Amino acid sequence: MSAVLNFIRLQDLIAQNALQGKRVFIRADLNVPQDDSGNITEDTRIRASVPAIKAAAAAGAKVMVTSHLGRPTEGEFKPEDSLAPVAARLAELLGQPVELKQNWVDGAGLENLQAGQVVLLENVRVNKGEKKNSDELAQKMAALCDIYVNDAFGTAHRAEASTHGIAKFAPIACAGPLLAAELDALGKALGAPARPLLAIVAGSKVSSKLSILKALADKVDNLIVGGGIANTFMKAVGLNIGKSLVENELVEEAKAIIEIMAKRGAQVPIPVDVVCAKEFSPTAAATIKDVADVADDDMILDIGPKTAAILAAQIGAAGTIVWNGPVGVFEFDQFGEGTKTLALAIAGSKAFSIAGGGDTLAAIAKYNITEQIGYISTGGGAFLEFLEGKTLPAVEILTQRAAAQ
Image (cartoon, rainbow, N blue to C red; front, side):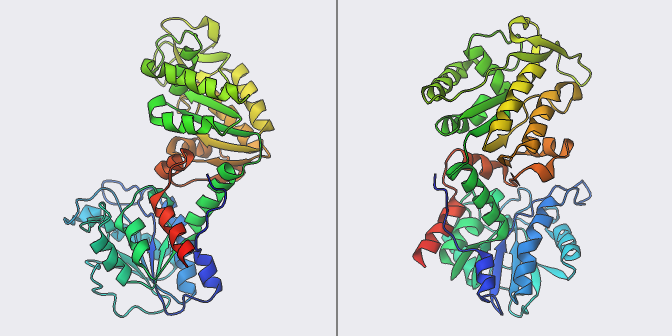
């Protein structure tokens, strides 16, 4: 995995005064949650997209912004698929009007944009051919602009017309500050990491993270597994896990990952104590047990304090930390101490830390450590695919365009 990805950055073009009077098409990620009345309930993604939009407008560009929202049916626009609430919130954040443009693919209503003006182009996924990365649609989008900016890391793992196709055909294709920051942070964490490199991969299922675990097994010095994933690894080393969540068909895979790392002198730390309950519920009584004492009717719902202390010490000694997933059912406080201990250890570590995934972000918010994490990734699926070492199509096309300049 390359430590340094070469791509054109929006900031570089601004520094060269290359945006004045130019039509700039920004693909942002404005896919925000809404309530039943269409009110935005959480606007982090909109706020994160503002710097690129503001910078382009301030540099004298005619700015067009688009995004997907939800999962509309291509070719069938419905009111609930509209970016209208996003346009209103964006206007508030920018302090200037943001007109929402419908049926924009052929350029209708975009002929007389002014320098510094910002318009929002209606939900990009309503356009036929968007999901299939249609060249015809991509060429029409590319014809609308002089400069294409991808600032949507959360969709970088998908090859779609507005994330990949348009970048092939636009006169100039570059990365916005949000996308560039993600790639810089991931490159730093995985391309040329300060050692020891420690990864925390947790979640309910090994199957959903198996390819990541295998990819990281070749790279990391310590691979901390947690949640249901840890149960499968505990079973792999012969421990009784009672009636805990487990994937019996993947026990051999877990053994193989332990062996791959052992050959390199690296390790998968197996818990020495756990927090158990007889049922999975917010009111379940939590009991701390050594792993040898887990009963057949126990459910393991967190790591125990001894294990948490051992892992916290490893985190304290790390040079780079990659974190994806809580190590217990942290939503229930009695099963949250393990995740809390590791979260606070990461916050207090001198290592460069990068965290991603919805549950991980929820834990960071719960324990109020946002400012102590080196970089928080906004892209769930894209973050995981990058960890796997997969090529992200939307990034690959930007590097190809940069190489061809």
